[in-house]
Every structure is written in C-alpha cells, then in structure tokens.
Image (tube, rainbow, N blue to C red; front, side, top):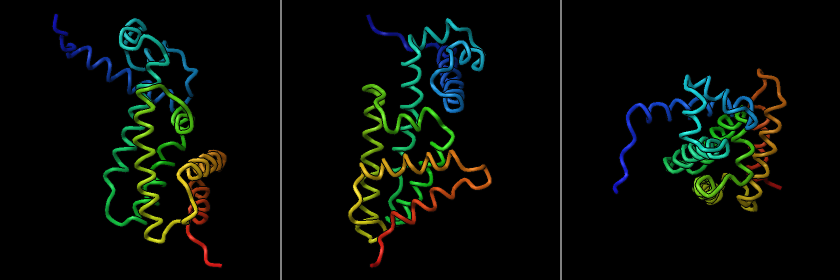
Length: 182
C-alpha cells in the first residue's frame, strides 16, 4: 500500500513543534520537557509524540536543520576566499553563541541524520579554510580539527562576555588565525 502524504494540518503542527523546540532548546538546552515544547507550539503533548517519538528524535531534527542551514551558507560563499572564511566564522559563532544545543552539537554525536549534516558542515568549513589558507589569509599550519577546538574556545569566551562586549572573543581569536610574520 502506498504511503499517504501528510495532511496540511499535520505539516503545520510539525513546523510549529520544530520552531518551538528550536527556540526552547537554544535558550534552555536539551533538558526541557516535551510538555514545554508542546505548550510553546500551541499543540498537545500527544501531537508532539506523534511527530517525534522521543525527545532525542526532536532534538536531532532541530540540530540537523540548523547544521543544514549552516552547511548551505558555507556552500553559498564563493567570492573572496579570505572574506568568505572569516565571514562564515562570524556567522557560525553568532548562530551558536546563544544556542546551547547547537554549541554542544558542533562537537558531539547527534545520530546518523545529524552526523550527515555535521559532515556537510565540516566539509564546507574545511573548504573555506583551505581557500583562506591558499589566499594567504589564514595560518597554513591550521587544521579543521584544530579550528573546531579553537571555535569551541571562542564560543566559551563569547558566552562569558557581557552583552555589550560580545564579539570581542571572536575578534581576538580571528587575529590569531591570521598568518604571523616573524
């Protein structure tokens, strides 16, 4: 028997659930109860469970969507390799700065679907890094694995800065990523 396409109201509910979960997971982390997500989405808990059988499946869907958007953004860039690389780093940190779940997902395992999105993002970041290195705008000895660790540190710095000084941590980190003359 052929599978039926989801009804329009089911698609709307799924979109509302994903939007609510994205907001609450970003702000409060993954420990938020599904009932909180349901209330914010304006649907019942049963509706959330029909779409996402576990909180982990909802979390993976939310993080995967964010990683896919970041990977798409990395793929769209293609003008000036130096500007593209540093612009993407700014976009990435701005996206992750106040997003507890995304920050942890950037360095962790989030399941097969999420891992595919993370791999796409990793490939985009690696391509941008190579382009900046070839243009002489980024340190030649920097690997993408080291860049991940450095970005994790930059996010930790950003989260500790007062709101009026946000961006300072990334600015300092970016200076360290540029090649140095001895």
